[in-house]
Length: 73
Image (cartoon, rainbow, N blue to C red; front, side, top):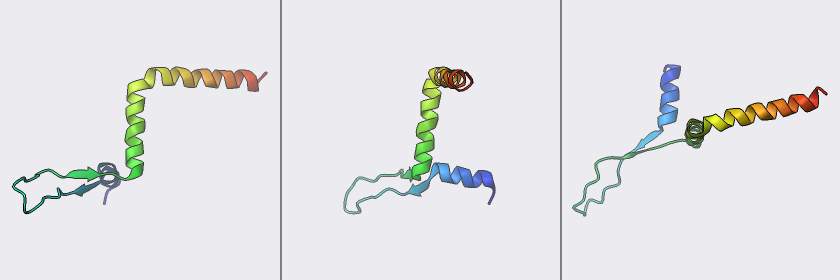
């Protein structure tokens, strides 16, 4: 199995079919994907980065500048 397919399978997760009650008249057609906790964490971090990348870059650069200013006095 190729590396790209393994990463894709990990990120998408395992398909969970719908739980239909056979005595009910309602049929649910679509299941869902159950992701591994590390894939959910990666999604949260990616969403955070995409929403707030402007200030995270500035904050990181400021922290590095403060560290360099203190460390190399």
